[in-house]
Image 1 (tube, helix red, strand yellow):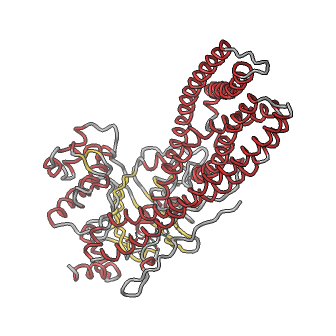
Image 2 (cartoon, rainbow, N blue to C red):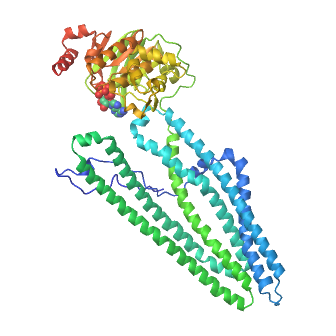
Image 3 (cartoon, protein in one colour):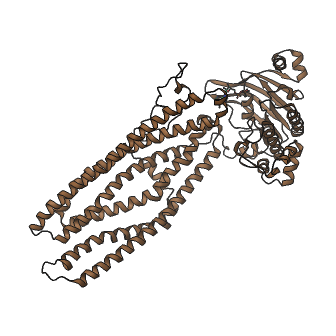
Length: 618
Ligand SMILES: Nc1ncnc2c1ncn2[C@@H]1O[C@H](COP(=O)(O)OP(=O)(O)OP(=O)(O)O)[C@@H](O)[C@H]1O
């Protein structure tokens, strides 16, 4: 097996006015070029998706295929009969009746062929769609279960491409490819048998060109495919840049980087055009090459055919039939070459899809894991060590004892390990050493679902899904009534701003909630968490500064939200955590100080320094 990966981003030889290369700023990861051998194992696995429908639908498709091929291949034979027996028989007795009957038979055969093809297409589409539906939902279900470490390694774009492009490329294989393959094989076999039966010498002579045709069709198409893939890759790079430019338009304009962006876009556009020109030139060469080879076959056919007629071994009618069959011969060979390439693309897509499906979620229930009973909210971290990457500890032996209802604030410089602690508590990752206990249960021994359903999480980057405000709050507890949703919103001071929106709770918000302000998004996520009513609440506080009025609203909302729950607050604005029961100061993955605000201020250590620094910059 050989995989030829394009270098990451072919360098664009443009320098900006400060001498830095523009491509240093933009690096887009390309997909690999597919140049692999056919993989039977993969192929078989892919076809297990067809199994559930095979019994039901494949016999019908097979029947239609055989019917279509037989009728198609009978027509040239009837034509030869019409010439030899009705139009120009050896004894000179022409027969109009026979000619009419044969014509009628040909018309009927065409009708049967048409009907067979209509039904065949219908059934194959049904199979294809069912298979793709199953594959797509398997993939989506699996991706939902995968752990954070999987997404750490992959950009969202590449995950998206697999669910869309790779599945689509299989769709083509399942809807048309497989059946065309069947038709072509049956047709080829039929023609070979007929040619050899009519006249084996002529048959063999004509077939001399078959390997040449097949090689051209397969190899040249392979190069053409790779060239088109290159075009797609260049285009996808343009798309990535376009996407990034649109998303980052505010920053681009603020830093007046439009010219730079345009120059880079131009150079990418030009590269894409060049690769298109190359692929298109190859494409244009393909047709004539196939025609020339076909022409050689036809030449052999007529030279030898005329000779055989003269020597009495062949009739004119049979030569016409022969030429008809040979005409039908090139198409399937040509298509088989195309199919082979399509299969290679599909294999590469399925390999990428199966790579995802085979990825075991690292965080999964142990065999026999029991659900966590309703908790009170006591939490213990016992000598917890954690490494995202081997050899680079993010936490170096954390010991924490939190009693039910306490609020713990985690503070420290950026990268000190605050988010890592809450990632471990929610079991988004498993500890590298030590353990996390909730009400005495090691969280690795209980089911993930029962654990997370009792923990509410409000993240820094509040995620708003596209839909109404109401549905976004309901995300906290799907069975909540409208009244409960409004009560939650009222409790966290979100009700006022929601009712001022054009459609109140039914206002549609775009994906990621762009129409809402940062503070409003926070309040919505508080309402969502309150609705879920968890015993343990994790709050990764937003870093962005919010106006004083909203800040006050958020403070009040927080009080409501935290009441009676064990809570972990990752605090960036130190003013929000003064009333916390315990403030834990982290530094390079270690707890350096802990205590109440007053205790830590008196100690005049790291925390005191952080508070003073924040006040200095206010
Ligand atoms: N997904 C990840 N993969 C690899 N390393 C990571 C990952 N997430 C965090 N780290 C590393 O782990 C360390 C602790 O990060 P963590 O996110 O816990 O810090 P933090 O205190 O929450 O920082 P911030 O205040 O900036 O959010 C950092 O050195 C960081 O680079």
